[in-house]
Length: 109
Image (cartoon, rainbow, N blue to C red; front, top):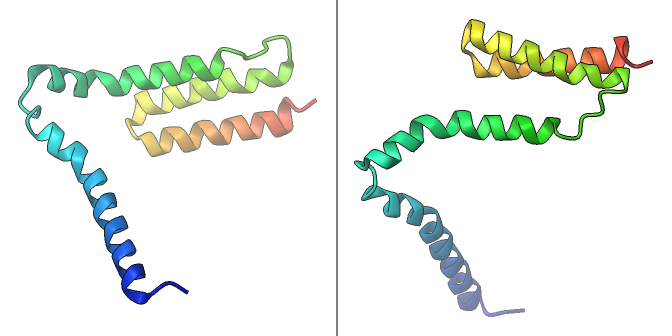
């Protein structure tokens, strides 16, 4: 069994390293907060990341199967809900519910 002072020192070192690794990005970005490039990217990146995720998820969608029609239908519902209400949680839950309902009942055959 290790000595208690050794265990305490190990926990303190681990805590310090964890805190430093979590604080480092904020400290590095502090100098960039007033940058025009960072401000531009902060407005454009969320939509770009979402577009990349959609393309990545739909790239291998087999359109020959009836069951795969649930995905484009759920995507249309998600986009429609988001354009209508501008609520990410509602959009995600609505699209997920439509996909699950169509894939498990209507288009399951």
